[in-house]
Image 1 (cartoon, rainbow, N blue to C red):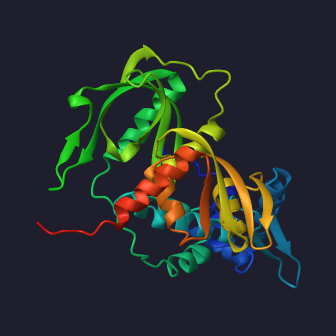
Image 2: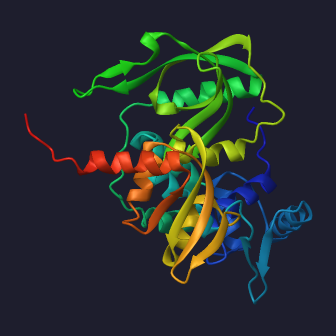
Length: 325
């Protein structure tokens, strides 16, 4: 004998799947839907079901008129929120196209059918290069499990040779790593934690991790005085170099750029009518110096001497003429 269907659950399902503020429905349409599902109903019983749903804190809104019209008011996400999340997924160069399409489909399911259709019609390919395999996605799952269980992971780490072949670091030896956090930075995913071979907190790009395995060994705990936010800020763009407090002399027009990079709490003072100083803690790496160079002379490194000299050496190398062999 088939189980009896719960009428009130099907009323809620219809409201969830077919209504929003711009597409309310009447009781007649709900009764017709229930009939298609083999459920008998009358105006009175459906109206009672709606009252019970409201009493159970379901956000059913009634537009009172000659014929009452109903719709689901509050959803988990508003249209602008879903649009933002969908754009982020679509623009990610970490997710494969297949994985992106799956996640977008799940996000669209959180909207009403009419809203989902509108969102789907506004999907545009933005030229983002997508990876071809999902190993990085699998790495996230294993790293998350390790963080939750407070266990270590082991893995190999690779770079690329000029002929696009993988070159495994550390002489192909597996890293013994205690993951503390997963960080999204500059369209890439990283894990931060303690590396036994480095003897300190480091970061790894998750898409460069290979053959990650969960270990049965307890992870090295996060030190009580470890400031994750400061660590992320200091390893500028996730590249490592010596930590320095650097003084930058910046053109006034670049204040927004400095705030975008270092936050509103950045230490600044007026230098002259056209410039200001910014004191920042950075990982003095090629990436940092490249960022300064990209400001087209709008930013000058004035201290410390080590950073000034390192930047001059980099500029000297960049100015050398290229000689073809």
